[in-house]
Amino acid sequence: MSKEFRVGDRVRLIALPRYVKTAEPMPMLRPPDVISIGEEGVILDRRPGGFWGVRFSKGAFLLDSQYLETVESHHDPHPPSSSAE
Image (cartoon, rainbow, N blue to C red; front, side, top):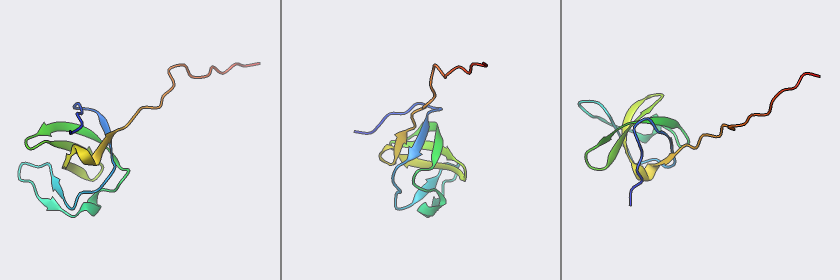
């Protein structure tokens, strides 16, 4: 079963496919070393064939959900208040 994401979700690359396909009108296959495991990106859209368009720092690529995980935001809703004494 594939994971579901929403447009705008932040995701992290957890594994590298054998090659990556660019998310351009005329997609090209690129070697997987253009992105690295642990790199974070943003979901752009859902594509046919179960692929997700993901924007990384070096471009947008089409990836299957098995290579992605959602990035949890770790912000504290109640940050410690600073008190001046």
